[in-house]
Image (cartoon, rainbow, N blue to C red):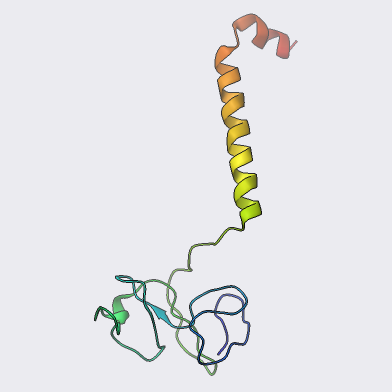
Length: 109
């Protein structure tokens, strides 16, 4: 079974891609259970998978794909970089609040 997100070939027994971690089946919007591509209802909570708007994984040989992609999973490094940028912007914002008109004029002189 090929992963719909990264096209990696996976064993049919797997529920999640070995390369990117994406679900290899229909993800239930109600409980998050990964169901088989051919299931019409969630095996855990009974919710209709036809109403599911999250990604339905493409089975090799031409399955169906759902509407929206799964949320992006960030690496630890990416999270650290985003937090550092956020903190830097917050510090700059606080500094800007403390500027008086003379300091602002000197920046553009």
